[in-house]
Length: 98
Image (cartoon, rainbow, N blue to C red; front, side, top):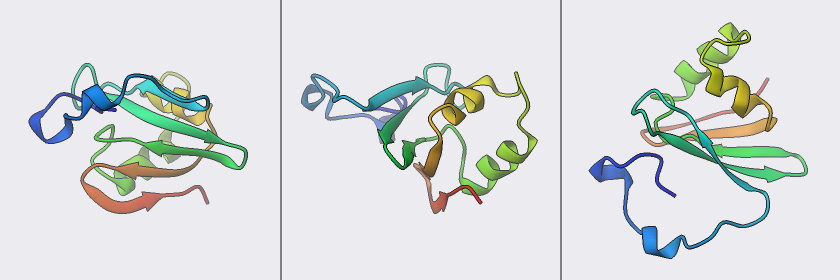
C-alpha cells in the first residue's frame, strides 16, 4: 500500500492485487491531496500505518489532544478504528493512547 506517490513511498504495487478482511485504506489528506493510511483492525484495537499523515508521533499526539468534531476530519475517521498504535513513515516513535 502506498501512503502517497512521492518517489520514497511508492513501489511494489503489483504485489498488492487485493486486501485482506480487517484491512482498511483510509484517506488522510494533508501531506498530499491523495494521501492515505492503512489500518489493520484487530480484536484489541487497530494498528495504523499513517505514512506521512503527520510528520511524527508528537504532532499526532498534539492533534489528538486538540481534536474536536470537524478538526482535521481524517483524525475522527481514524479514531473510529480505536487505534492502539500509530506508526509514521519518517519517525521511529510510535503513538499509543494513554
